[in-house]
Length: 80
Image (cartoon, rainbow, N blue to C red; front, side, top):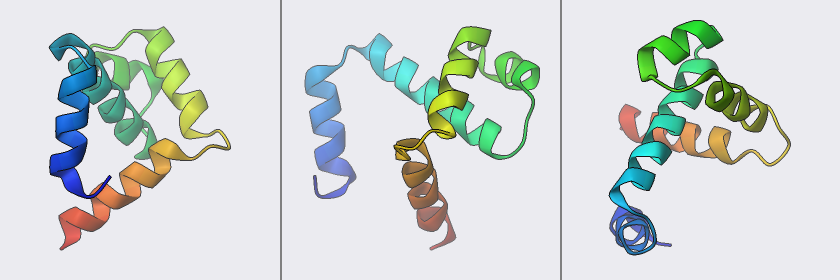
């Protein structure tokens, strides 16, 4: 995909509004965990269940690197 407009259009086509909200919540969980927040704090701040926080943490620290890639790109875009 090229750019946020294409990604947005794709997500709107394949996800319900609830699913998009869940994806946004998981990304926020990943951001907070990456910043060193505790599981309990992340759960309280985002409303995510402890299971979701644990699952995101496992992916964040896993070998695929998708969350880390996206978090890095978001940081770079914010610094521009």
